[in-house]
Each structure stands twice: as C-alpha cells, then as structure tokens.
Length: 250
Image (cartoon, rainbow, N blue to C red; front, side):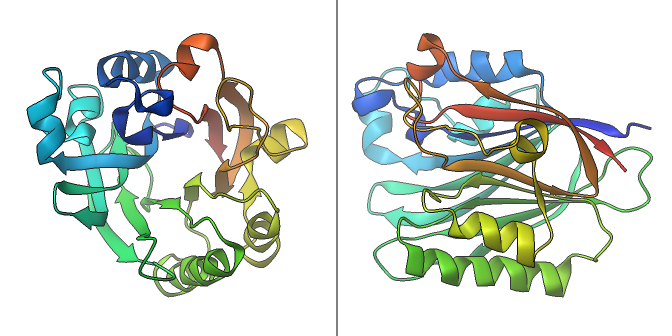
C-alpha cells in the first residue's frame, strides 16, 4: 500500500518546440521519464494528425499519448476536444496504476475554443476508494472560464464523493486569479504551490516564466513538495514549464 504519490502537469504544445520550429517528442519523453512520476496530466496532446505524419519523418506511428506513455505509464486516457480535417488534439492522463473508469466531458464555452474535462478514476493499491483525477485546459477568456469552472463544480457535486481523494490539474489560463479563488474557496481545494511556497507557480513562457497559468489542486492530501521544472533544456521542448508535486494521503 502506498499513501504517497508523485504527480505532474504539463502543456506539451502539441509536441512542437517554442515557435513550432521542430518536433520534440523524443526529448519530451526522456524528460518526462526522468521525473519519475506516478500520474501525469497533459494538455495539447495530438491524438492524430495526417499532415504531420506525412511531413515529419520522426512523427510517432501511434498517438502522442501512447508514444509518451510507452512502457512506463501502463494506463492512459485521452479526451478528444479539438477536431479538424487533419486530426484532433485534447487532454491526456498517463498513470502507472490502473484507470478503472474515465469520461471526457465537453465544457466548451463557445464554438471557437473546444475545451474538455477529462475525468479518470484510478485504482491505487491498498486504497478502499479510487483516486479521482481531472485534467483540464481552460479557455483564454474570463467569461468562458467562469462557465467551465461551473462545469467542473457540477462534475464534482454529481460524481465525486465529498471525502474521495481528488486531483485537478492542467492549464487554467488564469492570469487574473479568479479561477484560483473559485477552486480554493468554493470547491475547497488546495493548490500545491500555494501550500508549499505561498504562491502559485510561474509557468509561462517556459524560458522566463511570468504568468501563473498551470496549477495542481488537491483534496485529501498533504503537500510534501512542489517543483517548477525550468531550465534551458526544458524550455526547448514546450512554451510551458512542467510542474510536479509529491503528495501524501491524509
């Protein structure tokens, strides 16, 4: 039985480097493996793209989430959000532990931004109830975010038991801070960097992070530590910094 989990969230920028100069999926897989996490929440993951597969010789033969998971994270779930002629992209959760149920919910606020809520229930050895994990990538504008936050709260109220362990992570695009207030005050969640360091993490742009866009919220856990993975090598593979945390079940 384990009471401790190592988790991370990362906007992978569709597998391209800053300014879309080159494919970086192989470097990204190596960096993510080196983190040694149990569960990873990913945003902007390409499920399929016909033109990229034809154009780039190093494009993976399967989906990006399968390529990144490989033999390390044995279970994964993918929520297709944005669909276009060439393919589709969305959110993904990679897990070392079995994903026993998952569902992707459309929380788009308007037709110009396709957004989803990927909800997984994960079977952690020795736990009497599953861990609920929700991966999100909220819209760019405050009004749309308010609609999406209400959808998250509705999902928690209807599906997640009040005492169940819970992690919500992703790219919240919350530079104005209103989403943070809703999640911590209304939904009674704890943001891991706030608990560990007193403030949410600066995560964008990755080379010189200024904006606090990416977050990890938990319920039913004590935060042991929280780390921003920021370096020139990390900045080469996405415009967002990766965030990770060690959390312990209360």
